[in-house]
Image (tube, rainbow, N blue to C red; front, top):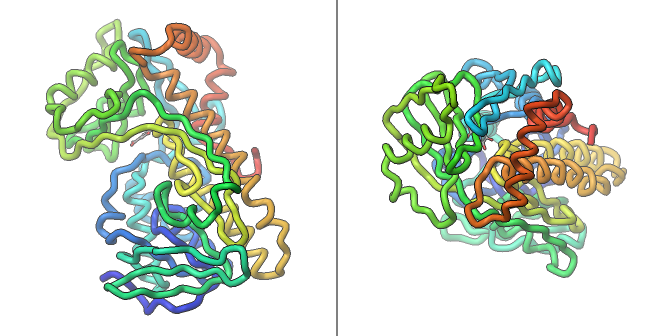
Length: 401
Ligand code: DHB
């Protein structure tokens, strides 16, 4: 099944991309009485199986509740009160609940996406997979349109507004002339090798470690499934890493001087490499085209902000578009880009900090290495530093930044 209901030729909001941003937006708009069509270039099964991070901020959990995609999350998600930062053979616990009064939810992005898709299908609202967008046109007029190919034929979708939620390589953002866009980018000199394994997590909370030989992260997907990552050189191929070599490396990087940590090993069921970069596009709007999620910004995975930023973007955008369709008042849609970008830059700074503080760059400047270690020492010594880390990790409320 690729489409639910026939896709109309005209809608209020044409949404390009059925990742968390596009899907969540379609639901939030529906609750505000605004029609939308979601077009996705990839097949449904591909969208539903792409491994991504798994930490939901409080605001993201709230949004899933608002749209009614919370039943499985509540039954199977794992609320976490804190996490551990490990370095130089010792660990520091960051108690988010105590420091900020909030916690986060471990619930994988793949599951969020599946629930948002299922909900849209149940509601009979237009969502089309295998629909390759060829061009987003006339966004400077009040009659923008999206040309796309589906089942070997070309179609045109007319809309009042187009939202580009099609990732950083998608076609939507190309509808903004280059001369009007500023792009900020940082490439990191390492990547992540991630695994899923059928073994109970070795720690009941996440561990972010700056090990002797590099970063490692111990996460989980359920009480019986471990998710873990290690820093690897750019260009590394997952196929070159034997399972035992990965476990050995994880073991070294999580080791505690008092010998109290043991890593549980089990069958590895998935292995993949993620490159790391930061990217921000300014502005996030041009005429009747609005960008949301990865189409406008990329964060490195450390701290798991990608999905949370995408959801925050579309919460702000849904409110703004709802207001505009209801009253034609442009105040909120005019404020969208600046408002979203304030959060994007906060998350960009946070994920850059987490990344540089916890990774080891073998060719890096020793001065930077000393600064990273000093930041870890501050987190160990100062409750204020732990609170700042916890606040950023659990995320800021809408409008708080
Ligand atoms: C996960 C990924 C992250 O980038 C992170 O910071 C925490 C958890 C994960 O996949 O579980």
